[in-house]
Image (cartoon, rainbow, N blue to C red; front, side, top):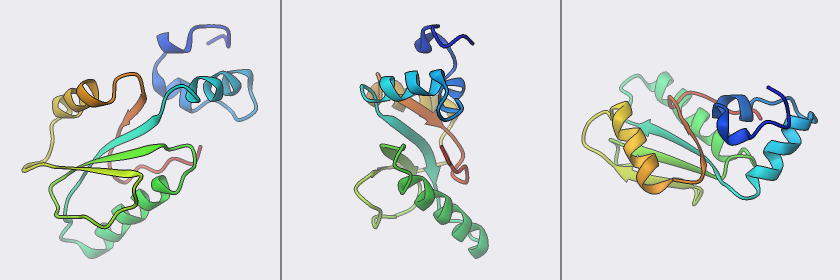
Length: 124
């Protein structure tokens, strides 16, 4: 995509994976000042301890990323001890994609939202 194209007409993944220092990156950073970058994911109690540690490590990495403004957890767990950057929404069963998008449409309009698995880490 050309840097002068409207960033709102391209997939979000293209915008957030722009090379640092590129003209597209500068456009993303300018746009980001007006909108939050929000990770929307699920959280649950994993019975396998090493896997649970992996999930928690991934979440903490994203929470500590200065480019991530908020992490929303649709949580089946009774988790409460997360930094203020984390919003916890209790749920009963594993969420469907339609529920992620319904939540994003209801509460996160106007933001850049990444619907992702819990173990995905953002390095950008």
